[in-house]
Amino acid sequence: MNVNKLIKPKIIIPPKVMDALLIAAALIMIGIGAYIGFFESRGFEKTIATIVRIDAEDDIASEDKTYITTVSYTVDGKEYSEILDSYAPDYKVGKEVKIKYNPANPAIIHADSPGFAIYLMGAGALLLVIMIFVLVKNGNQRKVVQEGKSETDAESGLVLKPSVQAEQ
Image 1 (tube, helix red, strand yellow):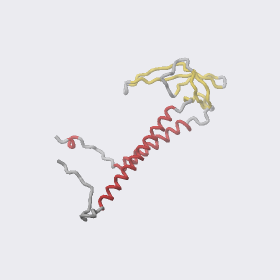
Image 2: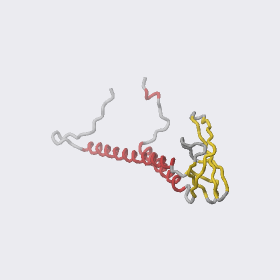
Image 3: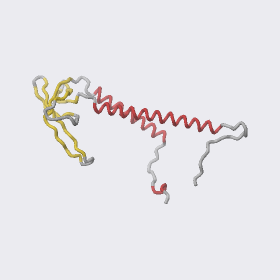
Image 4: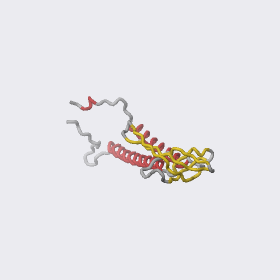
């Protein structure tokens, strides 16, 4: 039975388009990571918050648990209790954590750590480096094949072409 007859792709993406999409994805990952890590909380103030509650919810799709961390903190004498945008395995009720809050609206908070942003930028940078490596390698291979098509053997005068192995 021929496997090629069983699997027929519905969409065929040309390699150059796929390369461009992967490079764009890498740049988008780096950009989003930079935004989250450096610009989303620009102008925010730092303070210390205390973890007051950690709720675990079952995620049916992944069969994992999602943890929701609620913290309490004080700004200008007023106490706030808000959900933090991150969770770490070492979080325990009563633990103090660093947060950033919006001075115009202290109910808007973020964890004071780059965390996810650093991972996102790192993954984007790694993908970009891999794509550059692949493009350079493919370009060099393409150049060798193109040069090989026009070479002639000095002794025999024959034009040398890259060999193609016949199907058996």
